Amino acid sequence: MITRRHALKSAAVMAAAFASSPIRTLAQSTEGAHKLPPLGYAYDALEPFFDAKTMEIHHTKHHQAYVTKLNEALRDHPDLQKLSVEELLKDLDKVPESIRGAVRNHGGGHYNHTLFWQCLKKDARPLNPDGNLIKAFGELFTSEDDAKEQFVKTAMGVFGSGWIWFAVDKEKSLKLVTTANQDSPLSKGMTPLFGLDLWEHAYYLKYQNKRADYVQAFAALINWEFIEARYDKIVA
Ligand code: MN
Image 1 (spheres, rainbow, N blue to C red):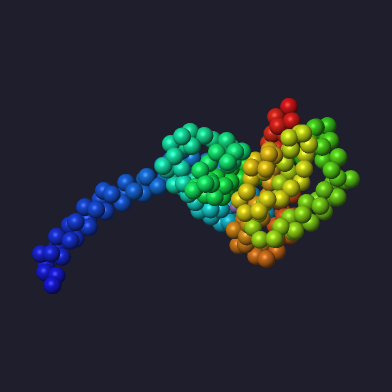
Image 2 (image 1 turned 180 degrees about the vertical axis):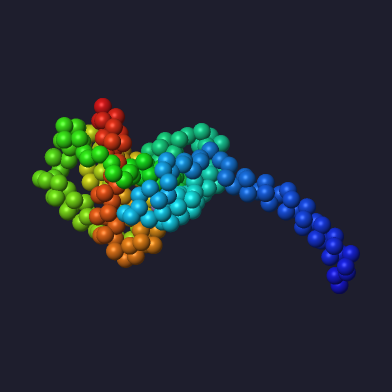
């Protein structure tokens, strides 16, 4: 039987518990080797192409969850905590089997989104007509329209969740590739240059089932300044 005294005592214990440990637990859940990087711009900066609500949920919930779960996976592996997410993904074989799947998925999710945010910008300058990247595109596509058409077609060919990428292989040649889930081109011996998130969480609020419209909207948000500088560094 619960007496009033017991009830009061329980309430006091509960209050004490809420005053200390849950707050500490909450703080601990955001600690770890890996952190959610800031987006670098406002959530509504890419309107009307990518809407503010999607950007906010995508960054604060989806990307945050990849970071949190990566840190959880690495909790008992202080040696691996010292490695960057790039180092982990480039050589998943050195990650113990018990956490390899988690590092592949959540490390991949963290890395892919970190790069993705940087590749987006509204009113970005066009591709430099004298740059190295436009020459590399010229070896893959016959025209700008051809590039767009192949990009959309390839993106539409990804069944389920994944990414479409321009990535640079070991011979420093530019490729249009796709990956499933949160797999990163880094784990396939390539360096991703820029990519587009094809998970429904990236577009469903605004575009629902119309993935093609979302993929086409991306053309208006490509941060060529960032991507061309990245390309020059990768192939240097
Ligand atoms: Mn995403």
